[in-house]
Image (cartoon, rainbow, N blue to C red; front, side, top):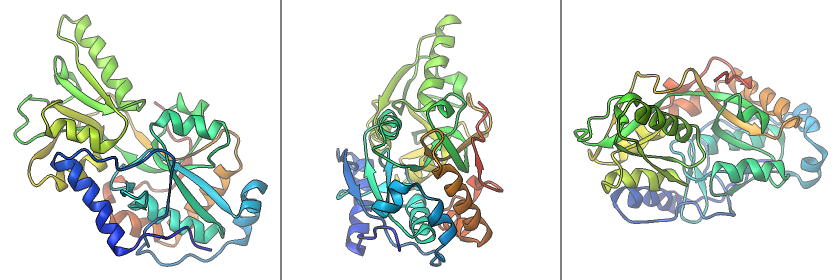
Length: 311
């Protein structure tokens, strides 16, 4: 049984238009809180149903015949949430494959902020966030991670980089936007404290609930840079028609090895089920095809794993 698949070609265009509008200056709410979404059809080959994996699902999921997957709004090219709540991107393709493997519907719900994601899972409202969500030791107290991505954290700036930002240390006195409650927010706030301790101006940290709003802050000159994962920032730069560029690439920028993945509640049997499902997608080439289809070759990891984050 496939995941919910309600997105038509016209709706795909609408999803792309939402991102384009955000990049050109129109304020659009691309991810209404509490919306239930379907996913676009994937170009990956259909998956063979696994009775073994289906039987290993929690009874609650087998009874409902669905997994409730939460997301934190648009995080392209992994997650692109359209104006009507439909989801596209690499994670949507992974979701389609997972639903076929497990023999259940995967229902997608969008909420505001990572705190709402983790809180909702703790309250058993959601079964999983397929991610990718940054895996850190501190977060492993709140959930178990099934990592399937390696990321890098860089800056998106206006063309020509007028603020002269080249790495984390060059942000003192600058205006930097981040995702609220994310790991980049924590790092940039710590850097601001280092700036003032050294007698330099503090960083004006601007926290936003979603990626399109944060990137719009740079295009509208409210912020000098957006500090976030390289894959989505690369997407936004490509969509900006030359208005934006990346900087700080190749630098650690406050992070060591940064793994990202799906997250489930601590001690949930879903962790082992998802890990086995990801291993199947690795072995049959589906994972590689999906990642390459979305230009994420540089973010692939050799094999999925549980709680790989050590930072």
